[in-house]
Each structure stands twice: as C-alpha cells, then as structure tokens.
Amino acid sequence: MKKHLLKNLVKKRFNLSNFKKPFCSKEKKRFKRYETVNFKTDFFKKSYKDFCKNKKILIISGPARNGNHALMSMLDGHPEISFLPGEDFLLREFFSRAKENEKKIIRKIKNLDDVEYLTKMSGAYQDKWRLSYESYIKKTTPKYWSGQQPENKTHINDYQDIVPKTNYKNYKNFLKNKIQDIRNSKSFLEFFDIYLNALNKLVPQKKNLKYGHIYVYSGLRRELFYLLEKTKNIICLCPIRRFETFYYSYAKSRFFTEEVRKKALNELWEHWRHKTIDYLLLQKKYPKKIFFVRFEDLLKNPEILAKKLCKKLGIKFNNKLKIPTLLEKKVKGNSSFKKSDKYKGKFYQEPLENQIKFPKELLPDEYFEIYAEVNKKCV
Image (tube, rainbow, N blue to C red; front, side):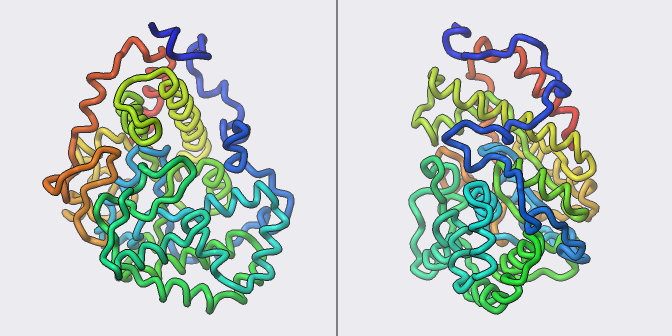
C-alpha cells in the first residue's frame, strides 16, 4: 500500500549535512516566483546599519498550516511585543517581484508616485488592510479566513469570524508622508524599516516594548536567509507540526478532502518535507536567531510553552498568553474546519486527534528522522 501512494521516497537515512542548498533555491516551475533571488543590484546587496535602530523585531514564520496563527494569537496580548492585526504579504511579494524582474521593482521604488503600489502588496495583489478596514466599518465578515483561500490567493481574514479594528488611514498617510524617503532608500532594508513602522500605525501602541515590530507570514524561507544574514536584531519563531495532523488540515483546504488520497498525500508530503528541511537549514545557520516551536505544545501545554517562549525572548511571562487573541479580542483560530463559539479564546486539541487516525504504514522512515531532528531544536 505504501509504495502505491508515496512516490520518489528517499532510501538513505536522513542527514541534514547532505543538504547543501535549501529547496527554495530551486523551485518547481509553478512556484518559480517564490524561489531564492540571486540579487544583482546594490539595493538588495547593501546592508543598513540603522535597520530598526534600537528595536528588536520578532518574526513568526513556519511552514503554512503549522501553527503560525496560533502562535501569533498567543503572543498578541504580551505588553512587551507590538501588536499586528494579521499576516502581511509584502515581504514575500516584494521578493517575488524581484525574482521576476529585479531592476523593474527598483525603478518602481525610485520613481514611486502612489503608495498604492505598496499597499496592494500587503495582500499580494490587493490592499489587504484597506479591505479589512472596510469590512470592519461595514460590519461584514469575509466568508473565508486564512488557510481556506485558493492556492496563491489572498485572505482578508486571519481568523474565523473576526475582523480587527485597525487605523488604515494612519497606515496609508504614514506611507504617503514617507514617499520621498522611500524613493531615496539606498537598500531594501532601509525601505523595509519604513514599512514596518507603517504597519505599527495600523494598531494601538503599547508602552515599554522590547519587540518594537512583529511580522508574520508563513513559509518565509528565502526571505529569512536574506534578513538573518544582514541584520542583528531579528528573532524568528518557527512552529513545526507533525505531518499526520498537517496532512488533514491542508488536504481539507487545498484538496477538499478529509481522506488520505494519493494526489494529496504526494504533494503535501513534499510540501512538508521541503519546507521543514529548509527551516532546519536556517536554524543550523542561525541557531541564536531562529527557534522552533512544537505545534502540539501550543495546543496541549500552552502555559508551559508560553513560559519557555518568554524565557527565550527575554520577556516576562504574562497571563494574557494563555488566551488566544487578536488585538486583545478572543479568537477561535484559523482551523480549516469551522468552529463554534465555544472555541473562542481557547487553544483546542481536536487537530491532534488526526495523528491517531493517520495510517502509520504510509509514513516513510525518513519522516521520523526529520521530525526527531526538529524535536532537538524545539524550545
């Protein structure tokens, strides 16, 4: 049964040292725009010594459907971490456009005459924060939330049934007022510094922040290789999930099935394997900058995990971390499976039940070796 479902199995034992280059450096044709960019221009090659000066930046980025939103909702209310109203697409989209035509995007920045070119990148090709703001004003809730949208499409809602209250006008006006500084940016990091400050204008400001910026988006492998090489003040938390539970979550949203099927299994196994190995390579290269978080701990032992995370991040534990929130409003997560109101403000363990029902005979030996390597790196 196993050999009829999973193809191209690796026969030799897993050894991270055998992987000289990350998978994101050579993507399949359909994912080419998400491939690593071999930058040619000074705009991308240059560092920026004043990047977010005197501020620490927290990035949450693990593979998709691995608990990025659960982790964000845990840290949302901490008084020493800045607010963020949801995932922002700009970083990935900016790099994707550079992959397609590096000189063109630099010309766009140097001759910027309308900040909508940037605000539309917040949702890849649409202004996520404007659409979210309009939904809040109109008191409407988008039908779908993060993880349910079609492949390579934008989501407006990050969590089921909740639209955050944001100050879109402040965000856009800040970018308008900084348009000359954006044009004069000598490096991508100088521009990205401005954009991170713009994101802070969307939300209320906390006092005595240790992490002045937070940025969340899943799957930022090539972007993290770039950022962690060129900066000193970024810490990344990377949630990783067992394949058995990941499969059902992604199969539901991408293949519209709750069964183990050949096509879904093959594609999702490669998805989990490639991205997990790339994050292991990142952690190996930057062991003091990227920390793994076990998805199962997020759901089963949130208080214990929260205390460990606070220790790693150098911040005090706060009881608010025991309740998942967005801008301090209780959420019921972004599960592919719709939840009732009884789940609001709770870390629920139902996704872990899928680990039991997944046919163990379908899992390659390499999986257990990869996951064992992940476990060694978890907080």
